[in-house]
Image (tube, rainbow over all chains, first blue to last red; front, side):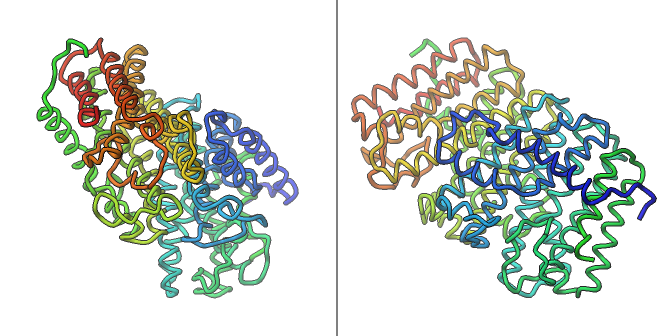
Amino acid sequence: MTGAAIMSDEVFKANLQQRANVVEEFLKNYPLDNAAIPARLRQGMLYSLNAGGKRFRPALCMASAGMCGMDEKEVVPFAAAIEMIHTYSLIHDDLPAMDDDDLRRGRPSNHRAFDEATAILAGDGLLTDAFAVICDMPLPAQNVLAAARLLALAAGSTGMVGGQMLDMQLEGAKAGTLADVERMEALKTGAMIRASCVCGSVLAGASAAQQAALETYGAALGCAFQIADDILDIIGDTEKMGKPAGSDEKKGKSTYPALAGLEKSRQRARAEADTAIAALSGFTGPEADFLRAMANFAIRRAV
Amino acid sequence: MTGAAIMSDEVFKANLQQRANVVEEFLKNYPLDNAAIPARLRQGMLYSLNAGGKRFRPALCMASAGMCGMDEKEVVPFAAAIEMIHTYSLIHDDLPAMDDDDLRRGRPSNHRAFDEATAILAGDGLLTDAFAVICDMPLPAQNVLAAARLLALAAGSTGMVGGQMLDMQLEGAKAGTLADVERMEALKTGAMIRASCVCGSVLAGASAAQQAALETYGAALGCAFQIADDILDIIGDTEKMGKPAGSDEKKGKSTYPALAGLEKSRQRARAEADTAIAALSGFTGPEADFLRAMANFAIRRAV
């Protein structure tokens, strides 16, 4: 722990909700020319996009930008694009050929509510449209391009998509090592969480040192979330945060706590949260307090 | 026909092949950090990316940029990204839930050579990575952003993805009107062909008038290709160009010539090619000749 101000859970949740509201307002009327989108495709995209969720990746992006001196409102399109990409990944992950999940957040998954073709296309559309939204932002072009590139790298074959590939292979093998699981998680969920933080700072035109601090923060936060959520899965606590509900109902999946044990996992989650908080030691203000509270919140029920 | 120089088929094909070679050289070693991509995913992406094809969308982008005064070499990453997006669309279109094609260009389709999960992820990876490649281009950031936005709009829910959705619905209904089919084709294949042309001019920093000319050219060319290919399907000619071989083996699919008849279709294809050629009346030089020849080549076997 650092000596920084501690934000109560209630204030933290209110801060998170406030940012979620702004992003949901932006997404409510799909941020492209709605009349140009075939009706069923638009319905499919909005069905999953408006299905709730804590919107914590967009909140990370907004708070990171705010912490680096930018008005958070200016990065809302980028934050929303992050959520569009996250939503596409959930739709595709649920497909029969992938995790074959019938439910997502208590409702039928996209391919159950519509059909497989619509679900594949809704995911493809959300992913592609996210970049159209980003490229339309009225910020310095150099910053937008740099952030878009980092996000694409975090979402694509060197990031999230690569992680899902490793996850499919681990599931098939049922014999992953701790190193296998750590690499998979770092790509599948870690990369987008890290990018959400770093991109906020890049859009804000932050210094290289500030960007590096948010890179460290985001990487550690993603790891803390992941391990904490896997612990909650094991001890039967359902209020997970880093991973969407339902994503780990696969039986016998290799996870960090399953392989390393609860005690070591709790220590590691605590250490990662501390690393995240320490990375922000150079920052002050309500956004920094929010990000520090996020790190504590991530692990609070698991350690 | 205009009075512009006529390029022979042989010279045209050599010009096309030359551009294809440059793009394939760029794509041969996948243009991201190969070591960071899980092996099976990388194999899946390269299997389809290196499966041949005329690469005519990248060639359109390169020639358009060259015609507007830019060294074509400078837009090769963008041209390659167009081919990555085109390839992803073929992989997803072939999936069992979509067109359910076992073959693509004479080889097993991606999900047959690998599996459905890998095919979905290879498509997702190629699509996402394309934007990482684009955002890394060392051209004026404003131009890169504008071109990336146009490409995303052409590929996403207001373009190609929307067109595939309409195609699925038309296939289910088996009773599309001519207007339905025209809208579907304009989105499914027209948008990316048009964007390939316009983006070349945008990257070259062309004037609004030049961009508009390439917009007209690209829209008409896409339409000419589409109708000509559908005519070739009907008269049993297999050397199609605008659409990849195998994409229309679906029986009973609504097409322009199927609904409007061969005679009207031939007139329309000729008229679109003429419109495309006329749109370039303000341009001279070998790239303009190549693009004019492309319009004639598109319809030469069908009219």
